Length: 217
Image (cartoon, rainbow, N blue to C red; front, side, top):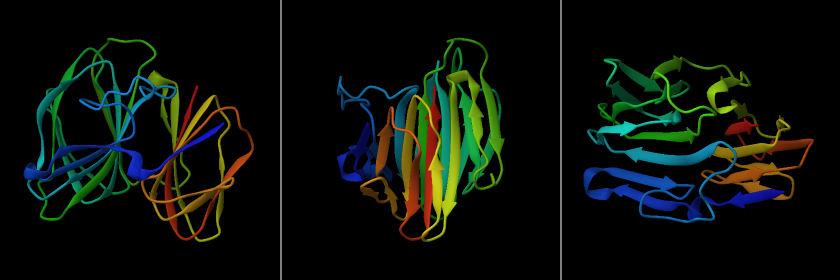
């Protein structure tokens, strides 16, 4: 089954006065939808836009694998383990909240920041927080999140280029930029497809495109 969710269907959030615009793919905060709580291990896929100087003040997380993909700009990350990093376009950042961690996410640069953040439910709750960043991940290099039984595939496609969608119990295809054809559907920026059961699927770039493809057990 292919369940397409358009960018315009995302739940709006954030704080416009504070320079934060959020778009949520799943039930989130005050936007409670009991029929849209999760897909496989995925419990959130948020598109965030932060104006220069804007950000999320220190807040807690627990029992969540948080994977961040910067589309443009630079994200400053600080957490309660004493770590501070700058995450740039092309980097994959993962924060394993485990038994509990607090962090800050800000745009300390002078240009707008856009990022996609995915939250995954771990197979086993608890444990100690962990952090990882992969700088400039290469196209088609899979990034594993074994704690959640998930794998991320980043694909950057030229016009007309094809990429296989991995088989799996749950697949989630998010279009970062450009347009792709997936079966009979054309997906644009911010659109996503939730796939179950189907096999031997390909995504074909209509023009230059960038995709995040999640494969989940």
